[in-house]
Image 1: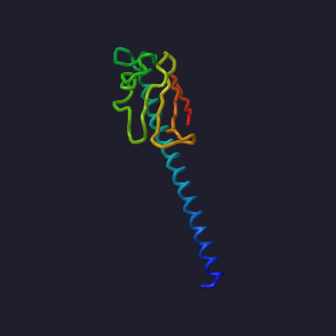
Image 2: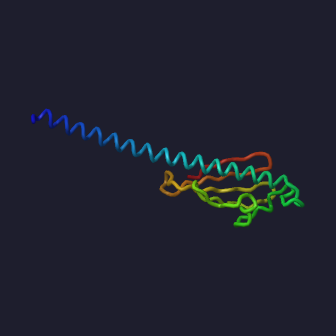
Image 3: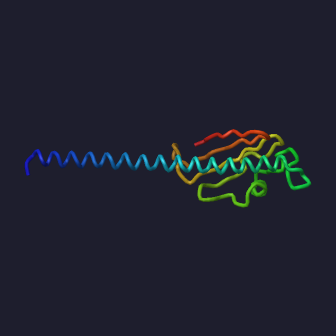
Length: 135
């Protein structure tokens, strides 16, 4: 083989290596983004259930226009869902219901930008919600 052919083979190997590295990075970024979206979707569902709890009368097991029945332990989350984990992540009550608001947190299964698991919080009010991506 001539020197020109060896040079082309080496150049081809370098280009393929760079393409593989870029592909792996894109796949990891997509996995993180998909997990963050899934955790956010689950939290929006839990927020909807928290608002239902808020509006339901206390005689029917609800909050009677208060989030105060949702505590920051497993019993508080059990009022919203039967499971605190799923394939997307783990969910908890971050800040207990103060009457007018409650904050729910979801921790995903993928690692975020700082190397720790992704984390999303949602503040639930009587008529609205606010999503905050922690990581």
